Structures are given as C-alpha cells and as structure tokens.
Length: 198
Image (cartoon, one colour):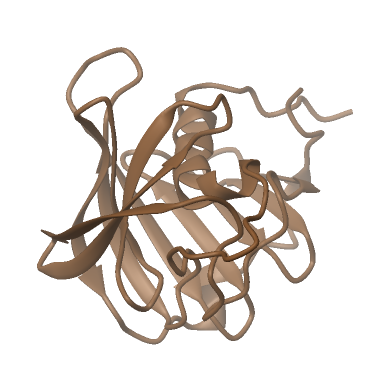
C-alpha cells in the first residue's frame, strides 16, 4: 500500500486556517442569531500570513475559492503539496506534486455555512477594521476550546484577520476578487493514491 502522507506543519497550517473560518460552528446557535457571513459569496484569491506555531517568522499561505462549486484550494508557501476541499462532495484532497501522489479523505470540521447566510453561533460585534485594503467587521466569538477569538470578515464573507489574546494569528496581505477556473481545483487522476495520514 502506498505510504500515507505525513502530518506536519502543512496540515497544522491548514487546520488553523479552517478553524479560523469556521470557529463559530463550535458554539450553540442563538435564538436571535447575529453574526458574520463566513463563506465567500464571490470567487476570490487571498494571500495570507499566518503566525508560525513555533514562534518563528510568519508563514505565507494562498487560498482560492470558487463559489459555484463550493471548492477551496490551499497552497502553503514553499510547499509542493496543495489541498482542495469540495464542500459539495464532502471531501478533502491532499495533492503532493513532488512525489505525484494524492490522498482523499472526508472534509474536516462542521458543515459549511452557505454563502450569504449568517453563521450559527454566538457573536459580539466589536466594530470595523481594515486588512489588505479591505473594510471588515470585527466579531468576537470562541474557538473550539472556548477561548475568545476575534475574526474580521468582509461584507461578502472573506476572512481577512484573526487575532487571539491581542496577537494576530491570520492576516490577509492581498485580496483579489477574480474568477477561479475549474483547473485551479483539479486533482490529477494519474497520481498514485496514498492512504490518508492518521
């Protein structure tokens, strides 16, 4: 059987990114839900800087989103591996272009909040901010461990900043609302199949 992809910094960064975008899903729904749109309602290409888990310099990461197919592609900077999540199919594909391998597993986290719908959960609006030239609304909620976290979303559902305990964890450095082609999210069918990492 092909060797499984190993977990590492790449997967940790991806988990951090997804956690930031779906932090509200860990909270119980409020009777009078008020909160942000957390899923982009437009095709978008965002470049982020993310705090390094080991305290080193920020790590770059690119996120592309196609709204018509509900697909997201994550490219960690300097890596030969990229990840494609299809929320319509409920799958996460990890593609290793260096070793020509692919691994497919269930998509992580809770169900996706559809574009244009307020995320379930408890949110406190803190005000407005700017990131990467984008106006955003700052919301306080909680992460999966119940710790306060502040997330700034644009009006069309693009995450541009996440901070916790006064420290920026995720920060957008560029946002481009451009059409994303199907080719961006392709998973090469001729790559060898590897078992998902455990």
